[in-house]
Image (cartoon, rainbow, N blue to C red):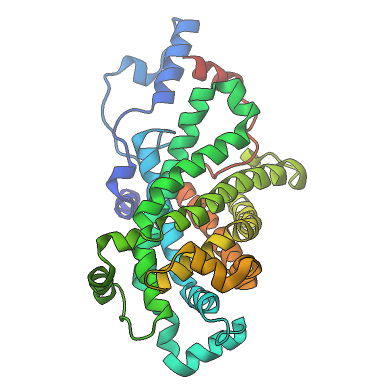
Length: 370
């Protein structure tokens, strides 16, 4: 009884939409394969009537069928956690970075930028704009990770098994780009308010008063003024984030770890996810930084254009202003995001992302054919 009550308590911590009450499809496929090959062989599930059952514990693997609605719901929820929490945690870095991009004469370096903020706004000033950051990047994370898993599977099915393996990097790139187009539509209004709050002291305290003030000033469509530059920043960023992560993790398991991924411990797999994510984040920061400068400039200045931004910053400044801080921030951020995302997947019984697929066992091969 104590064990049952403990399991019930653990189940209540996970949203009910992550669970399925139907019988596991692989179990049914195994029964069918076994009965076809040996008519005298049967299992309890093949002879007894089907009954619904409760998943015994959230940590038990196999309770969510791959590519089922529950799988995509889990990936979406994991994306909310990974992006929302990490972006909120690095709000002070983001605040200094945005101000260095907008006013480099005042915010000359990372250390001096923190000093200026502390002197003018106090410790509370370091977290100005955290609400639009949390909500905006939670919405973006839901679309980014949930739709990436969907489009990766969709494009793989379109290509077929042979081409999917041959052109896997192209599938990673196409899937991540498709997902980010959708995710940025959700992020853009929050990003516009966030930048204005962070770079114009006195504009607003946060989202609750900043959003209506922004709309009164520039109209509802003004919230999407930075959408195209945001796509220009985020789509290359996300393509690099997912494709390089998948490639780096595969290389780690192939060349740096002597045992197959399936035999590695979960903590080791999560460590690989963080390491792969951090290295991918460095590449992401470099690729997307010019567009990041454009987004900050356009959302800060009313009526500004891309031409105004290039004229003000210069081409070199567009590529380099605030880049060292952004490399530190995005590397840490991306590593933490992959760590949190894969930790959540492990918690609900799903495998971590990427890596070398283990050799298929004979039974697994037969199951795939059923």
